[in-house]
Structure formats: C-alpha cells, structure tokens
Image (cartoon, rainbow, N blue to C red):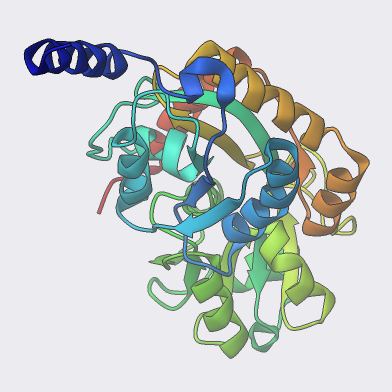
Length: 327
C-alpha cells in the first residue's frame, strides 16, 4: 500500500471518528467524574445538600461526584458554567434553587440564558422551609412579640438579613413587610453561611434562612425561630408555626432541583432521573433530609419543568406586588 493511499485512509478514518457520538451519547455514561455546581458559598444549605446527594450518586454511577461552589450574580456564574458545557453533557449538573431559577426570572434579572429553556430539567430534589430567626438580644421569642416590637418602630431602626438579594428569603421578608406594614431594611448576604455568622455575632438581629442551616443554631439556643414559610411545619422544628397558621394567605417555601445542559440525550437523562428517584425515595436520605429540615421531592423532568414555569408565575406576582427589583 503506498503512502498516498495510507494518508487517504487515515483522513477518512479521522473524519468518521469526529462524527461519532460521545461516550455519554453512546450509552456508556458516565465515563468520568461528575460535577455538581452550587450557587452559594461553602457552608450553607446548598453545600450541605449537594454533599448529602453526592455520595449515593457516586456509588450508583461508579464515578466520583465533586461539589463545586460558584456563587454570584443571581446564580448566573454557576448557570453559565452549565450552558458552556457540551450540549447534553450529563457530567456537569447544577443544584438549582428557587432563588436562582424562578425568583431571578420574577425579578427580571438580566441573565445570560433562558430559564428553563437553556437547561435540561432532571428532577426537583427538596422543599426547604425558610425560617424567620432572631438573635436573643432582640428580646423576642414568638412571632407576636416580634410584630409588636417591629410594627411601630421608626423606619431604618431594624434590619433583616437573607442569604441573597432576590432569594426566597428576600421574597418572604418583603412579603411579610407588605402584609404587616412592618418597617425592615433588607441586608443581603452571599449565602447562608455568612448570614449565620453575622446572626450569631448579633451584627444583624433578624434573619431569614433555610431550615437546614437554621435548625442546629435554634436547637443550641443561639437563635430563636419564630415562623416557617411552608404549607406544613418543618420536620426538624415541629414547634414552630407556619405562616398560614399565623394568618397569611399562602406560604412561600424554597426548593432545590437538579438541571443539566440543554439537549441531554434521552439515555443519559433516563439514567440520571432513575438514580435520583432511587436516592430520593430511600429511607437513608429521608432520615438525613428530616434532620436537615428538608422534604424529599422527586419529580419527572416534565413535572419539574411545569413546576418551574408555575413558580415563575407565582413569584412574578409577588415581586410586582412587593416591588422587589434587581439592585
């Protein structure tokens, strides 16, 4: 065989190989470590939840599952990492929250992608109660004492912290202000970890954060919990009343879900949804979630997509009524 013909055959072979589907598309997914990206700093609720899910997912898929924190810009730093991944690549996942999906859209934040259109919804993961907390130095231990203290206070006297501007906690705080007439100034933090640190130090005396971060601080007596924003009481704080029990017309729970890059191959999506279904329905995860104050919430990709679209509609109405805007 002459060199010219060998060159032609090699060129033809390289073209054919370039046109072959990836290993993930070929049914050998996963073929390398999987990354779960979160939009908050380490130490908060998203970080804890991602790590709880990472271990059984790694065992099920036979590959390491790495948790990476990429906070900032209403989730667009982490979201952009997903949209830049290879189309349909199931090796890069995003643990999304209602803050960075539904509420970011509700506030009309300028995002470099479309929600949910630029992502593949995989499953909802959990409902997370948002808890109204106070530092002991504020001198209140119940919601009625809290409203009595705050309601007639002059503007600018009291501040409340949340784990981010446009977060579910921010929406709950502004909703409470709108419905009660309380004067509170919002102080956004970059995640529940930094918020918890300042609450414990008394730098900010009122806060709203997820129950999974708040629960150990409440059990230790370092903070007081006054109310939770969920249809049912938080499993790890059963003595704390819900907003609906306190007379509010509806509750505003936060949620977590998992998405991947758009155009995920059906076989890859099916494998991931199947493994997440098994994980979320396991007794071990149910027990861990209860300890964290979370409720497991498995859904199909179609159900998750519909829920996101409905949530965007609800939060958009709240954002308009409470005048919540992008800073």
